[in-house]
Length: 199
Image: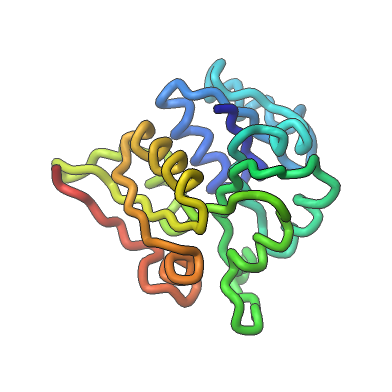
């Protein structure tokens, strides 16, 4: 399964580092073009390549982690999703002031789903601080917990399998209507909690 990353900020880069640590190949892209990512991919090694937004978004599984107000532009004019998996790692908040965005009662994943029509959306990788995503998933004698949720059971199983390959413990929170709200920041009860599953 090919993997793409749209967004090279804190979470996109942390996800790339976690993949690189596990020797998993991926293409990472941002709005500034592949050349701007040379230093990052040199640091991460041969499994992570810099590409265009279109190249990253053409993968079988695409993690999207972009500043909230830039999401529509980042996801515009991309190849048809046609059932491919999109991991929504976004939170409805804007740096540097970290003011929450008024979603008119919708969950952030509902908004993201409208931007990726035809994709199988899974909410994941948004609730932990970036250094915990990129760091050692083993802690206190157990494995760090990563939550995920979605409507498509096959897509969730594939994301759950990737989480396990990265060394984390994946915990399925059910459908997006429930799970995405639990991990949404701000508002949900689970963000930034660094939980460990003891084996």
